[in-house]
Image (cartoon, rainbow, N blue to C red; front, side, top):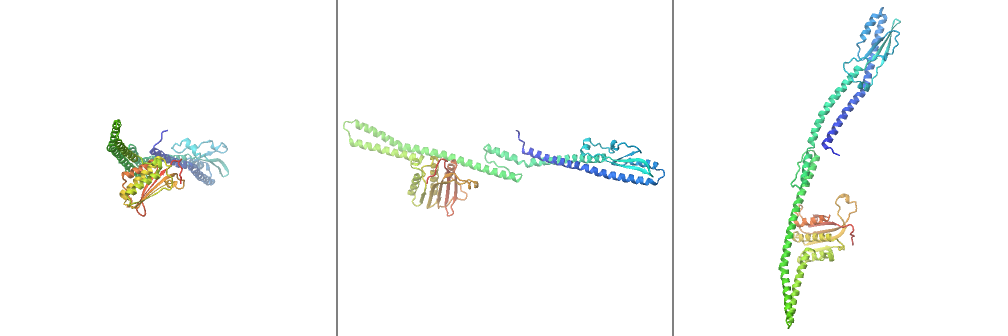
Length: 465
């Protein structure tokens, strides 16, 4: 089904309202036409009757009333709104058998006459002069002239109303077209956003509602531009980190693993040569085996360090709490001037691997930033289960889903009011949002920074105290 545009719907609505207003006005005029015509007929009948009665009364003293009566009958033919029928004595024919004669030159449609429905009325006056019956005078109301006036009024009202309605409708259409012009700008802006264009801005014009929508879309476009810039920076950072880590791994393998493997191979060859000699040199064999064992130990430590760099060691075996203890102990050893406190009241070994790894990276990045930028002498890390932070006020009343809550606090210089997030913090936020979590960074009232993270738990996970 084809939908009409807002402009067309408004035009139709306004046009129909104005047309209905015109029809209602015409209906009211027609509805009042009947009482108006009846009132006019009553007045005409009453005046004509008074005139006839007065004339008949004046003829009572006349010796020969017939000539005067004839002239009077002739004068009655020029009366307006009434027809006069003179009936001779003894004429008993129905008065209404004679139809009213129209006296107006205007043609009134028959449907309009039937619609108004004003049947003629009759007043009969006997003509008795000095006891002699000269017949009757029948005064018949003739509403044709009044109907013609009403029809003229209705016609002019309809014509003028249609003309005024057309003019007003044209002006309204022009105003509607001008008022809805900002829609074109909104449409182009949305199309540009859909196409992925940057620096999309919509001109603020039109009514207040359009300006509010344009402002919201401009804010959305600015946010999208910022997110694109951050994503590009993160992608560039990711590529650089990957390249650097690959180079570092390759360098470690070349500088550390290569000599160890060469030493092992050389030791194996030496052992083979020593065992091939008839006289075994036991001390030499033991020394060669010790060298092989040392090279193997160095190689094993190298692989352990590489694996620890790629994935935190012990995360799957011992759980998040033990790994965090090891992380804070390593920092405490290198920086004893900063007091580190870890609070983990729950067993975190049941966490999903992705959640545990994200929590570890959040704490790792936060602690690194504290030692690099905060200039603090105290920091606390709290990791526990609890209800997820509500996304809106509507969720406050409802039961919140379980989540892993992480809070990192310090008493350092504090985060700026308008922080310029580095790639580390951006990466941390991306990790949290990728799991559907929430992260907030605020200044503590007593000084320093507080980072709060909420990571939702799968529904089949159960919190353990």
